Length: 260
Image 1: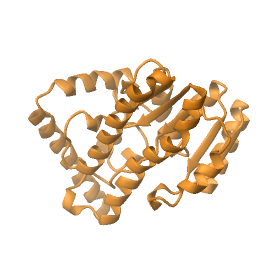
Image 2: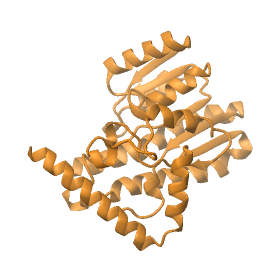
Image 3: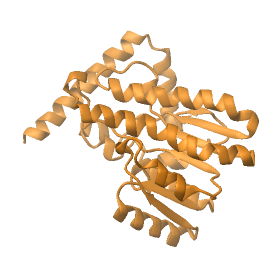
Image 4: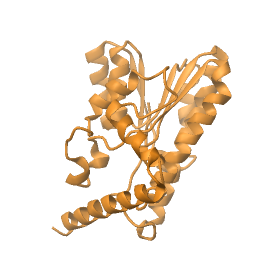
């Protein structure tokens, strides 16, 4: 599980551990990895291990990951690691570093991790890959342009890969959640305020994991499925108008907080 020390990644790891699955955590912070690994092992009585990797470093982390996973049977790969803007913003306001992080973390990591793990799954004729996309792939979402595009890539990648390898016993799932109460949503009280549609990471993971093996493309959470279904049916310009209004509101709030 990549990006596994916080949010959805950590919650998903705990849900798998509850079901007796041994866990390998991959993230960049060694101290957090040690703490989460120890907690999961002690709480759920499963074997845990971790790999320190910074996915923002381009091709750099993958030889070490490949070596660490060599000769280990991986049954489930969860490509969860991702990055978001500090707050929704205009494309020209984004730094070059932010743009490269979007590509390296949100897109390249899922490709490379899948490329490392998939051959072993094909050899065993069984395995599952979960790619955490976003509901922003539903329709064009202004002020989240690069983020939304990166998550749309993951959605397409997942769906095509499933058709490519389903006959070989591999199940590939695209998870497309709306906002979840994690650190990524903490830029604004508007975005992170608890509501009927805003689950905790733990609640979301508990629901999402029950869809594994059943649905190749899902929000993972029935309340989000309602919003996604409605969103797909909206004329594109209406979705874009609402998204622009919401993102401007969140941006204004975040900038006000920054000034204070």
